[in-house]
Length: 296
Image 1 (spheres, rainbow, N blue to C red):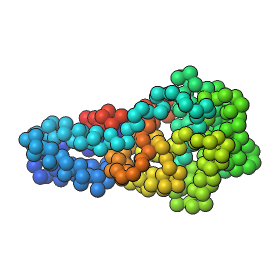
Image 2: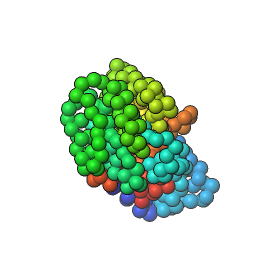
Image 3: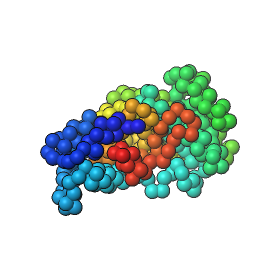
Image 4: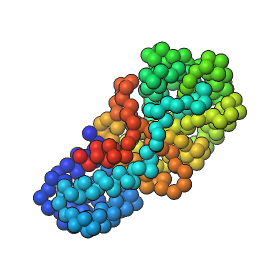
């Protein structure tokens, strides 16, 4: 259950609405990682919609709020979703996975691997985190669970691993190559430059690749997550985001803040949500379902 639902449960079950009700709603949204600018926009739209529809009951306002949030999140919904409609134009299709330490990149890769295999696709993994042996071992473990090979190097750098992995994927005729990378803070300029190099090397080894550049974002990071998205998007041109750890303590509002922040210009789509540690705990993101889950 999202933390946002816990805070709003009693609000939508109250007997009437007044200015204090709207103040409580605003406070709850801000505290639930929706953020001040997004909250102000949503409250203003909700007031206009309520006036237009002559709606005043908590139940009616709840329904209108869900509609407003669905409209806001619709800009982040991929149509079609490249995770779930696999019409591969490139063989191999290359996915570059990035993010900060602890966001759940390697676990997400394991889930993606199982998902693509369930669609009958052959998958190859590449251990591009050359800083930590534990990261390579974790990816090898996921590879073992999914019975897929993992390209690793004991020495060298991430770009060299990516280069070798592409040639391996080409020779094996793999459908999908997923390249893991070391976690890094968006403020670590030298490490962000390394990612840019990895992407350039991938493009030289296979023109048009990577076909997806995916950020794994911890759903508990709150407003700091917006800074991560901005920085990685500016550096790499993200195509997609997977939001993880939405199975327990996450407040859930950060995706609303993302939609508001990325209103202008090209934006990455939210492809899926990680809702558990299990290998199948990856669900497609849809604006209407997510909005309904936030407030019901």
